[in-house]
Image (cartoon, rainbow, N blue to C red; front, side, top):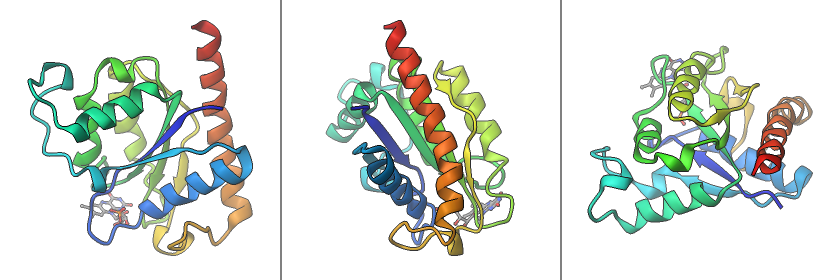
Length: 185
Ligand SMILES: Cc1cc2nc3c(=O)[nH]c(=O)nc-3n(C[C@H](O)[C@H](O)[C@H](O)COP(=O)(O)O)c2cc1C
């Protein structure tokens, strides 16, 4: 079975985008029979980036745990809210922290906002940073608009059929990349 990590990026009190991470976890379980690991950056509570893991003298247990989970995953889904047209510092923190762990790692995006444009702008910044670190970025991203009302607190979308259809396009593509990469191993 594929090992997939879902990284929930928002560390904001009262955050909304975490509901999208719960939704993706549920969909992977119910439709794809994949038990994804949820890596919640709010729980990890990493300090502001100072240096890459490979140069840290005594990395914390949390950093080691996070790096290990990314390293052993076949693919990653990042759930990222749009802040001022870009990504939150929490996600740059963990992109910069790791190096080889990202290399050729298939990474799909779920971008979220509370507006109608569904965090579309954050895709550019995410795509570029992940490309720079040599990850395999997956298109299309799942774009979730109006997050306050489009998904409830249990991760259930208001329009489940529609969101499942869009999310499946992203997940199917991620699974294709995972399979392709496996064939090249
Ligand atoms: C600092 C900040 C900047 C924001 N900038 C944008 C933006 O550029 N575009 C947008 O559509 N929504 C923006 N929003 C609204 C967010 O989409 C909304 O607050 C969403 O719930 C954020 O995800 P979170 O609740 O998980 O933190 C911004 C929110 C914050 C807190």
